[in-house]
Image (tube, rainbow, N blue to C red; front, side):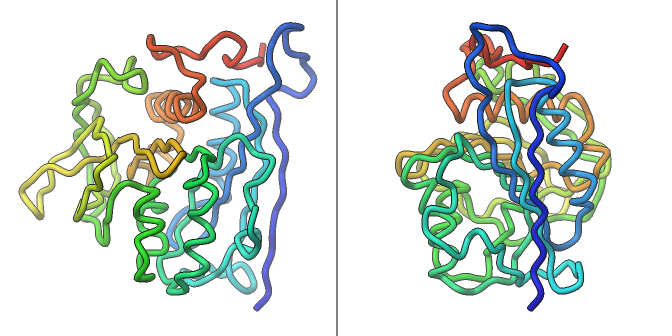
Length: 265
């Protein structure tokens, strides 16, 4: 199998220096690639959009299958070794590899988060590694989801407006042309923040949440199938708050702690 890895380091406005008293940027590892989505564009939407909202620096690992084929069974190369997340403050997962069945491989992906490395889980990350029998990845997510409804407009209801991650998020948000992932199991440390009603199932499904796994804090959303959702300011603001919350750098008012606001001018 031919594997390709793209490593990109993006800092907030490289020509501009941060304030003298600002802390160093949070080191974010973004892992992306796989089936069914425009990851080439999404990695830029996310890295640029989040750098405009928080003091972060991205390293991006983007892999597909052989010859760039979007392969559900491709094994991201950095996951092949223990300690793959060493040196990073948080990992942003935006990947779609649902066909991998190797339990040991999946448990190795989950291990750093169980040991305390925070995570952001976006969209198809919630369906990645679902073919494996181990619950290690599902416990990181906080839920088990195996399918989604058809691509359609979704009404997202904010059910936790006092949570720092949801401050500034509308009471109701019209998310155009997205996929509603069906919650099958919600684990004990899953905290729902927003929901949407399923036309197929005729019940609500949780689409934004926070979770804890072992020592690690996790922010997750199943939203973001299309680029139009990813690039919406409402979505980018949400993910920025979720990332900062998972790192312990978000105030109770929903704003970055001092020095963790974007250093771009």
